[in-house]
Image (tube, rainbow, N blue to C red):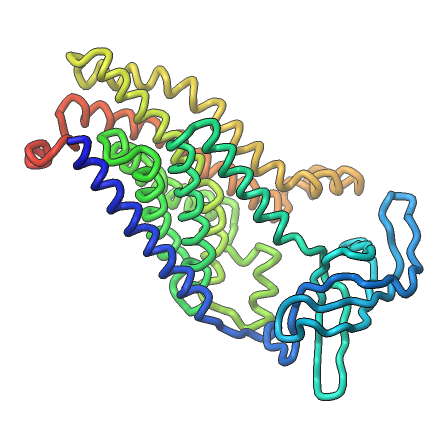
Length: 384
């Protein structure tokens, strides 16, 4: 039996890995150009600073360095690799990149026959990002062993699905809300099987999370209608309209909140499913009502902290805006009726309400599964 499970898990991980490679290939080889992205002769290679020709910068009283630098830079990536060019570096409030000799920077490079223009675009952060991600994976493996590696695998799968499949398909004209909903179910299934294996509590967790996602969609529609949020109220939508991208714009806010809250809903379902498994093992003779009641007792303690965590996470993303509102002495009636405040309320309440109701749904599914002996093999499946 153990060998059978090991073989099943190995086949699962191989299939998922091949699927991720296919998604990466798909995302890297399907480019759609819209308005602002149609820049012929423009590239963003990495450059190494050879010399600071001039430095006309100073430190502002806020602590931010501002001004201009003229640099001599060697291009070390891309089609212009090996070329030495002069680059302008303008340090502004939103992009203060102070260059030093030997430093690697991302360069905006525009070329045409007999002419080029180069300026500093940003710090070269890719290497640092890779190191930080590897550190996280290593930390998970060191603390939790194989379980940590399986969790890291599920995170990588989630990232690949969103970046290399979901976003490219949306830009190609796929319906955003329906696509995000379907891929969210795929992420949930693969992630939970990766972490917990082909176990009964895994299936309970998947069922509970699926109900949570459906409830989120329902609450989003209701609360969005109550608060008069159409989806076009998001600031970034105006940019998409400018570049003539008009595919499902009103659905993108739904997609963004679903992706942001998926982890929290999944966490509640997994925690309760694991609790139900432990309760059933501790008392195999427990009935459906008894098991459900015990699960809900644990759920009550869990849901309070989980809801607070989710709401604080959404509020944290809005913290600087709240500070600006305070400094501008906005009147309460003006503040409470702002569309961005309404959007944050929509984010927090729709996701939290779905998570709250996910708990009893998972507890009920778990109680039914463990008392009726479903999800336990071929004979069990025949009884469903």
